[in-house]
Length: 409
Image (tube, rainbow, N blue to C red):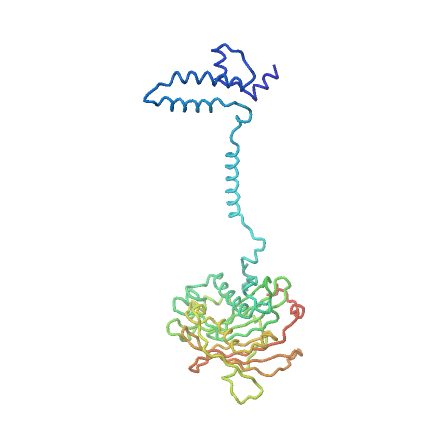
């Protein structure tokens, strides 16, 4: 009995077969193929008798009926009674793939966040931001260029103003400055470089502002290696206001002074500033210096900023255009002093003059190279004066500097 019940569960009797046995009185048979064959023969005979002959269409109708009967009378086994699992499996796979894709978009976390995002925030009145040196920011010596570091200084300064809620509709202008069509322009800058970061290094930048005289503002920076805490660069700068339409210098209004005063932090990044007088156009009477000139320099559209004049970082690239290649091959920039005299417009044509003095030894015993630069219009008006000091390239710069705690700033 138990065996019969188990067999019927896997090989159920066909309803058509059961009805035929009841009508014809033939005995039950466990051979499913035999039952199906006998059923198929009797059904074909009844089908031939039932199909009418109309306009010669009886043959076609009878053929269709026989095909349908053959399909319906196929042997029923355990295998062909199972559902079509391939369709179900395809549906389940599609659902899982869609869910995985959606989860990836919602909960995506990079393995190295520092390579994709720059963290920033405040430490009191000091604004801090971190940058990762990208592959396109390094030069032939596999270290970041001076223009890269200067761009990070500028980016941090603007993010400082923005994060403090003081960004108006201009390039670094506060709301009160925007009402009066005023914006900041840099007048002087001094930079001391102790080492240059490499590709993949994470650089931390601290910046703060303070007052300078009656109509100026001072901004300082301190860059350090986030992994070692070693100082990379220190810089200080002086800023004045210019009117957007007249392009003339302006006094700081009392409303603007009240607006920015609470963010002043009286501290300097460079204690001993270089206040030596910068050169005029080089004279040909000095036999101890070598002179180089590069003419025909013109701004590109990408060199302009939101205030429609050339970005101050671009000037650094121009003054180095006239320096001989041998300096870059054997030396690295250790310090520079910049004195901005005039803004440069879109259609200006410039000349870059570099005077290279003989090697001299500084207080540390290192042999250095000093250059004086003048960037001027072809008409003769001076755009920028600068002095740069170069030191011999170090084989391992990170071992020659003293670590400075980033928490100090």
